[in-house]
Image (cartoon, rainbow, N blue to C red):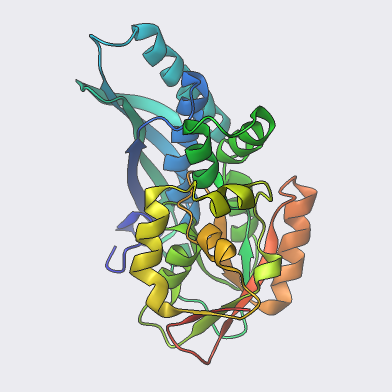
Length: 305
């Protein structure tokens, strides 16, 4: 975990290591069952990003027991358990505390061969960058809180946030010459991409027109309906980003949008990228896209073209 990896890895023996991660947050949707599913999808994602297989999990619950009906908590836990079952993860316990603000998530343990661990750094010049989910869930969640997101858009966002990265990770691990991976979550696409080249001898080019996102969110961005985390992400990493003249400001905002249960960002050799994309399409990951490449020039910087 020396370089801000998505999860911690501990080697048990020459052929086995465990991956550990923890994640929990406040509700971003109104339905408690769906909130439970999103929270679990998000928590498992860090293990998938390392190339691992999650095996066990423990619930983390903060609940205002004197202010909310306990039935709400039951629905959250039911949604979470069903998503764990889909992932083949065994719930083995948990911990709860009384709290004025509801929160839910997981501590997750997975396994991997020590020689197969994928770090967020390691991309090589010439690699293609694959993103497996569209951007914009943070902006949509903010619009939902403001009462201006329509039901169809919210439903599309929920479908993305409850879609496990399990299949994408399995296909990735079956593909030769995958050199690095991370999942796109709270730091946004550019924040997590910046981590992949931080201190490295390579840079990145991201092709703006190739990045998948929810087209409906442009209106919200231009209205200023964006999460506070987007501004913090942009302020933190903007000095590393070279923005081309054809990239509008509203699109840059989308690239900094903090995602919940976002997709994987994979650095894979050019000759394997198209094959991996085709396999993803065949398995239903239809919004996956090659969004750019790792380059030898502009070390430690990202160019938007």
